[in-house]
Length: 466
Image 1 (tube, rainbow, N blue to C red):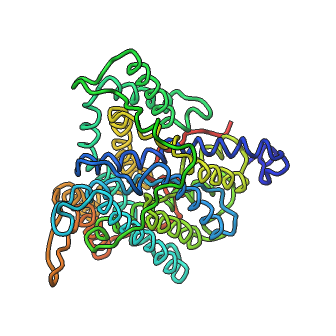
Image 2 (tube, helix red, strand yellow):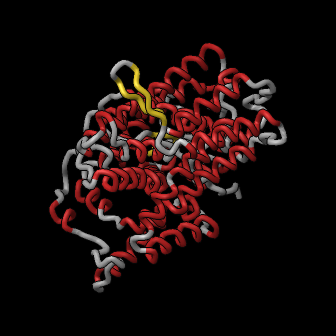
């Protein structure tokens, strides 16, 4: 790495430039981070027939992302230039809980059902702490032996494919707008330059929303005759207000839906830490240590769930900004985090975001859900999983059948408590158990650094050092 062009202490640039760099990081995470609560709100509205009013909103999500990022920096001794935004890995879990109609979830108010989903997020975050402790005691290589790409890759594939029907449902409300959003993301992801290549989702949302506003202004409607955009909530929203936090609730079924997904999100974290380390030329897996970065991510995720927000994860988009700017000072990331927290106290802004037409959400998720599955394939390919080996084929095959076949999950009763294991939970358990008991597990973390960097559920920046 050419250190002449690298800035590790941004204070030499002055406060003005540091603020601009912080805003750049805010933009990089923004599109993907706000998309998660929009998608999740859509799941609950479709399943329950009413919108969410507390928790899992844009405002709560921005607050959780900003505070979670600051918490992560404290846990990692202020050394790691990482931003924590909303995780796509848990979308399938939210969709599953939104559609639960048995046991205590039958006829449950939509906000209460979302609170139980967030309780599952808290437990998933606490799982990070358990794994961090084990890594501290026995070392990262021994732990990763149980979570190789032959297990995590197929699980990620199942996450994306399980969400595909939702993308089609939303896009079908107005295929023209959906295709505009999809087309913009493709164009900037393939042919974009500099910052535009790093924020294709944000550009897809903004440009297609502009088209929707224009169509609405000239009197056009959706094919079913409904208005493309309804600005009534924007007029009613205040300029300043407290985000609509909601305390989480706990139930064994929602915990069993969400907690296993932490396996995929933890591998996402490992991939991001490997990528950030390679980008800035410092081994953060050794110092401050993967146990500390996992602890920070886990606490941030548990905090987000506790106040009614989606799970957090380290963001590959912001790693792309590090590559682009060559400014590796974590202080700049913390400025972006503070800006995100400040923005969460502007209800008018959140109300505008909430007017996003379902068709645009469908167009974006058309790309997003497919890319999640494709990322799972990349996870397998770049980590050189040998599918000529029968053990690996068996593990992948069982995970796919469990992940896609148990569409209604597996419900059983212990005592008087009804418990549901979702398809993803069954797939994760089956994959881990088979990998542990079948002979021939030769995976060793760290022997393929490029593969280790490609384990995250995010659109990977292809920005190269010029």
